Length: 288
Image (cartoon, rainbow, N blue to C red):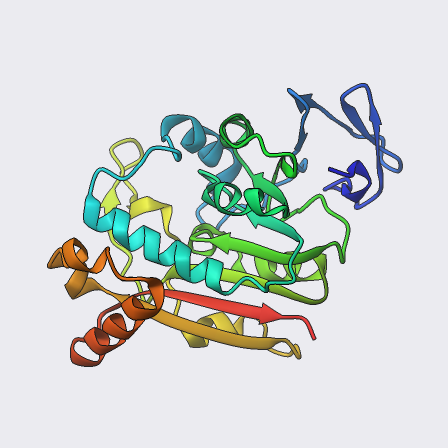
């Protein structure tokens, strides 16, 4: 990875690499690295209205959960496979530099880095990034640790940015998009996926006795809400809804797992005409 693409997440100035320590040329803040991985956390984080410290939360989350572990439920595994296939089908074929925001288990690196694509896995969890580079040590696969609301990258350097199942966790979704979009080259594409019209469930936390959302999902989206995030811009917005909750519960994956994506999409569309219970939405924001 060309280290010249990195910026100070606090002030946006260039960083100098001095023996594994990244020093901001303007504010002189030092950022450490771990096994060659830049740890570019900003000094201040945006908290939600209830004061959640999402840095501490997702640092712990990345250590507690194994994002690289396969799904034990085969129906969920099939659903996840189709979501990933759908996302991959929307990546422009001309993309040679890709940023995976909230990379988690880095399925994207595993899928793309064998294709001579330069990909940066970007996650708030240093544990996730270290595992990712260990499991997928491709020549053009790199890792950076930091905050998506303060991305430490220069503008206009990526052909495509992908953020799968992340935006529902983000404190400020509008800020999230407006921080990522400038990182794209002219003609670049931002791809977002999220659960479709999710009814967020809450439990009472045993520690603080306050309602806490399942899976740390803070927001629910449909096509209108996702489009409203870029209101006032001239971006090209497209969306795709798919997946069927009834078919998921009926364990139809036993047969559908053998279908190629194109044929599966036909079956899925028919199912949603009969029982309109869509599970996922993938949208693209293109910079003209």
